[in-house]
Length: 129
Image (tube, rainbow, N blue to C red):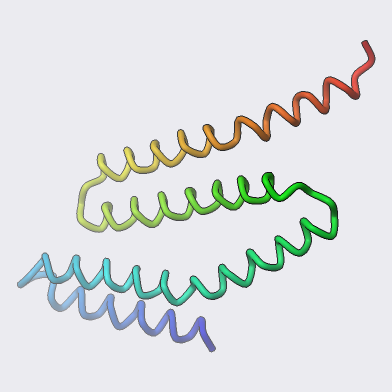
């Protein structure tokens, strides 16, 4: 049922944008951005539930929470960068959207360095000397 609401909101916003775009393009952009934000806010509760389940799984499996938090930060950066880039693309600014995506990728690499280091150390310990 929730997906029907989201699709309905998206279709309604799309129709409004198509009608308004010719006369007031700035209002069309504001509708698109607002719709994206509303959908994102609707999903925040679901994301919180996913994070709780992942934390419980990490605790029960003995995975250190620092690794889970780092992975969740990486996922968050990816989603936020994509969301921001799409909004900027909707405004017709492809070059700025590309820069947002690049920044997201660089920040993901920065956060991934400790995890990559641990993986390499673990592999090195497993290899015969």
